[in-house]
Amino acid sequence: MSSLIKILSIGNSFSQDAHGYLHQILSSAGVDSLCVDLIIGGCTLETHSRNIENNSRNYILEIDSIQSKSNVSIEEILDLYDWDVITNQQASLFSGVESSFEPYLGRVLSYIDSKSPSSRKFLQKTWAYESDAELDWFKMYDRDQLKMYRQITECFDKFSSKYGIPYIPSGDVIQALRGTEYFNYTQGGLKITRDGFHLNIPYGRYAVGLTWAKMLADVDPEDVTYVPEGADASICAFIRSFVSDFLKRGKN
Image (tube, rainbow, N blue to C red; front, side, top):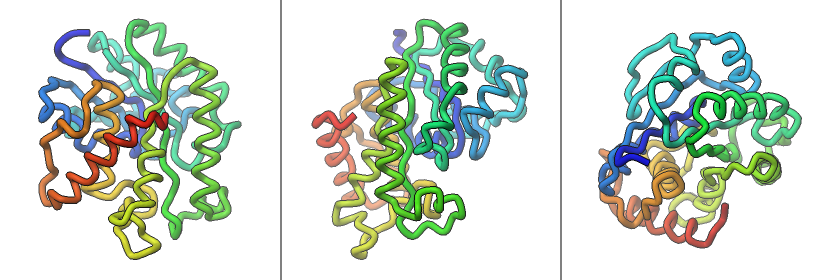
């Protein structure tokens, strides 16, 4: 791997959340990075697979969480660099629905391997919705956050094992934070999401960005000095310590 770590995500708004502070987090820990995200809001693995098959130019390109270009294709971006890391994920509403993953995940991974065989591949395990999320599709999980989390866990355990690809435990970190005093929303704490499903800005995005930094670049969250603008420094310090301890316990 070169001194510059080149990270590509083929995702949706949940990868956008994960990338929100990733470049700044890595930079503050002394890691030079290029963090590239291909985004279609709500994009499923089925749609990614179809876009690959048709070489569709349907994606928004963000570099270091800043929109750079629209109407780009997966092939076009895969061909830009020898990527060090490539991540994929299912759309949040289907992340706990096993039947929604195949044959699409296999097709996407096969294509990526053909274009970038030396890159490290990861899945992002997404997070369950807020307990009072008003989204219609939350009914798929009986509007039960723990049920959604358990089903997501079953899916990512299965497909991580099937393809021998680790997952980034974003959903585990978010669920664990919900049990802490700062983010126990049902007991008066902050919501870890901003709208029931996208992450709170800054704290939810910060927690997941720290998780990605550890998983992809082995950066201990305790070594990160970056604090998002407008964030409470003491809450950020708590999150860094929490995520560091959580990942050291090997929850993936």
